[in-house]
Length: 294
Length: 258
Image 1 (cartoon, one colour):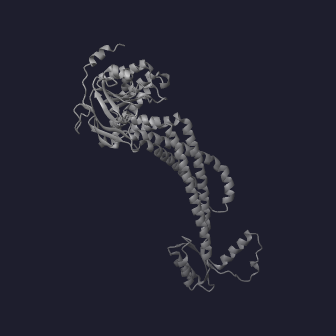
Image 2: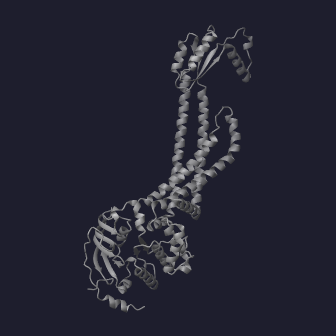
Image 3: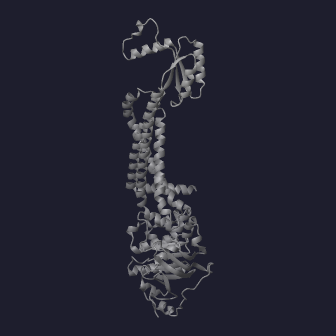
């Protein structure tokens, strides 16, 4: 068994270099395709993070009556917090609401006119964030029914609009990624097939001298995996080199949004390695299969 | 080279009855038994019709006939590249139709096959080409070197062992192929037009090598168009025409001599 693996690995290595032009062509194709795939993946991750950020903005806002006692409001907040579809509840009392309003004006560089008011015009409110922005009906009904609530701001239209757009962008992104993936698969499989066809004579001789299918297949599969591995490593190296300058340009843009990009590097690494090796193996498997079917 | 003595011995040849029907069970001492074998290709072409053939251990058989008579198809059936449409092909006691796919490689190691175009790997030396047959069948490395050395010496190529095929003459290339065919200690050597690309003198060298291998006990089945060699050697001749065995004679000539 060990000698079989050693044999297959040795043959794969020899095969790769004996047909160096073909192998390097396959590897280069692999690199281009993986770069393309990575580009789309980064784009899609950025898009998703952006969309999540937008979705987080969706919240149910219930203004409370000025007359309602703090205790009743806090009690209501506790009950709403216990609802399964609710992610978090924040109580902003009237004073805080005014303060926030003032800060916002200051950020925008506009004159603060509220100082001319003799009394705070803003109501206190409960800000309810949902686990799933689509499921808000129960929460809205529940808040409306409570005596402490003055009114619940209509969020339905906003939610619908935001969700339609985000769903569309997500689906579109996934479709594009899938299409790119399929194109990559076809090109890689065909490139590896060419490399295998170039060795058809060798396969024929192996069959004639009584080599078992495993002995014929595995060296090619390891060779395909080698093409995938080298392709993936080169791609990751290129991405690492490119990420510095790219990152500087991108942070300027993305800093606006508090994106969760912490796992992007790891995910991308896994995606590139997995896709590269996977496609290499699959391509070899499909290419050799036709010679072994007799 | 004088062939007179060979011819003299061969005069008293006996005719083997065509259609000698072996039983379903392997015939005692036979390496190869074909019974009522018909091969029809998917396109409707009938390549072999009701072929009966028994090849005893140690036999030397010439398979002759015009192109398209079915020689290549017969060889494909023997190495189980194709399956018979009807009838049985039994090699070394095994019915090839009942052989599971994964058992085919092991069976093929009982056959050494030689082609007109040698089928050597151009990037490997003589020694490596022969060793390749053992490597790809999972032979432990320590057993490879002695086995390769032995057969390379047997075909007389020890001095050329480190050369690549394109540095060799046609005859040397064919001898490399024969060494590769022998390295598994096969029961049967199938030679498909082994002298087709070689000039007459070299052809005789190859034949002498095959005869010597035959003397060592290996059964040889050789498909050929070379009438001079067949007639001179007075071995058993099986003639195919239009997919049928039309003649099966011991110590015979290339053409019918009645």
